[in-house]
Length: 289
Image 1 (cartoon, rainbow, N blue to C red):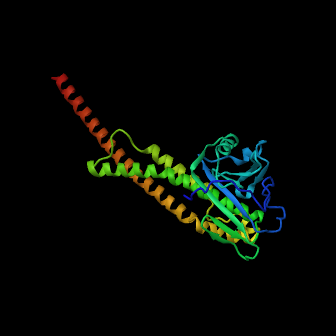
Image 2 (image 1 turned 90 degrees about the vertical axis):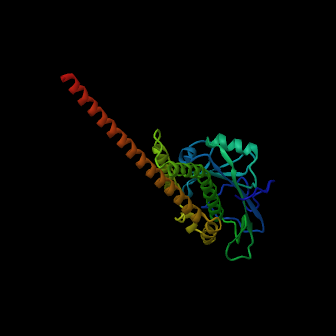
Image 3 (image 1 turned 60 degrees about the vertical axis):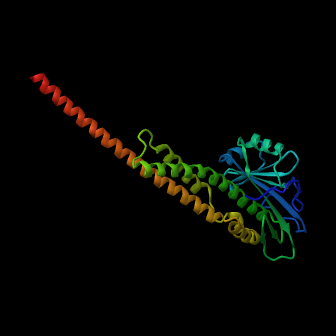
């Protein structure tokens, strides 16, 4: 996770109160730095429902996000994947976190906070991605929206990465117990865990369109190149694939334990039936004698 630098900053070329509208003509690029702060929420967000409320004044359907102004004028984007990006900030203070919770109904996972800087250098012909930042020839609305989207996907993916680690450890302990005792636990089958993991895999497949270029990137050459560079820099595809492999391995292990558990219960049930039949025969013979 990237570190937080602390402090405040202004949007510079993009006025804090101005919406990030990909349909308007951007102002002429000047030498400036735009700060962004992203964080994951504790779950997905129904942005279409939020877009119909008074708390949000603009929707970005191309990236499944809604936008609004914070009390101090800085812009807040809320993404359906369960992440927020604030323009003009390089930290999230307590009042901002409280405002996000109030408007989205979700808690901010402060451990996932990432900061990013977009610097403008009109002399460049193509964008360059640096550590915790990027340099672009012009801060077009499309480019800024692409940066916000990739940051949102990165922090939301981190939420899933953090959530899967306890499952990995729990499954490993179950496998170690099976190796020691040679039999699965009698009382509990991990059916619910398998179902929960399957839900997570479906959510990732549905909400992480990491391999699909967003429509907004097709509308601007800088945004197009910036999207590819940021996805590679934040290793989104590799992280996504690693997460999928972990979930698949957990699911396979739990399915194996469940199969053994069901087989063991089946054998015990068959044995109980045989005992009952024998008892019934003995009782019948004793009664006839």
